[in-house]
Amino acid sequence: MAVQSLERGMDILRVVAQSYEGLRLSDLAREMGLAQPTVHNLANTLVRGGFLAKVADPVRYRIGPAMQDLAAKSGDVDLPDSTLIETFNSTTADSLLVVEWSGSDFVIQRRIDRSRANVVQRVGTVVPSPYQFVTSLCLLAFLPAMDLDSFLKKYPIEEYGGQIFSKREQLIKFLTSSSKLGVAVQQNAKLFRAAVPFFHASGTLRGAIGVYCSKPMSVNPAKIIQALKSTANL
Image (cartoon, rainbow, N blue to C red; front, top):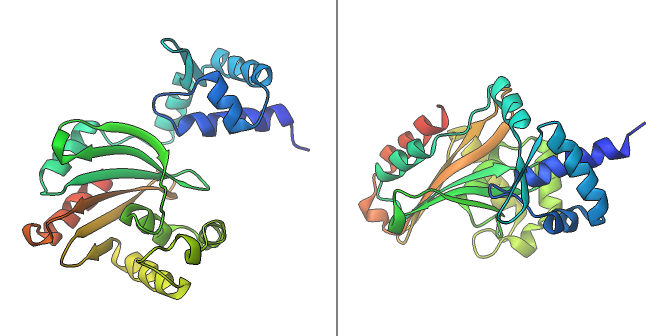
């Protein structure tokens, strides 16, 4: 028999974990679909246990030290920003994205742009067009079959495929090829995109690192792919 307060507490942790900057109580209540007093009591319990941290200016909730300690003990360690910057600057890419699988959506966690090549932006937003980002396509290629099927039902290819994929069969062919190669690549005369997956210490899919280049003639695809794979395997 499920314990409602425990389920809600776990849901709060999942929601907060998707935001690097943290969430205000009102935002958290809206995301949860619960009254603010209810969320406030649950969040305070998690703060006392160290699973959430309450920060000021403005007041918001972030993942706390107890959760970070659990992640460290499980072997999961975030890639250092310095490593992502080094990888990005070893290429001629316009941008680099780190996208993670939340269990139902793909969330852009970090981004680097050429205009600010030494700054890692914290994003925390869901990928708006999952079939048009090479990082989310890479993740789809490595999702378990059950999760992939659920995702395709949630985001029908006919509605979200855009100009890249008009039929499910086209998408599945691309995903199958990417899975075999260990990398998702899209390249034509106008662009080059590539992304590789990275995994939890348990071996389950965690996310993908990808780059976008608007000048494909100036890139070395093999060098970029190797740089991404080396970073993902750290």
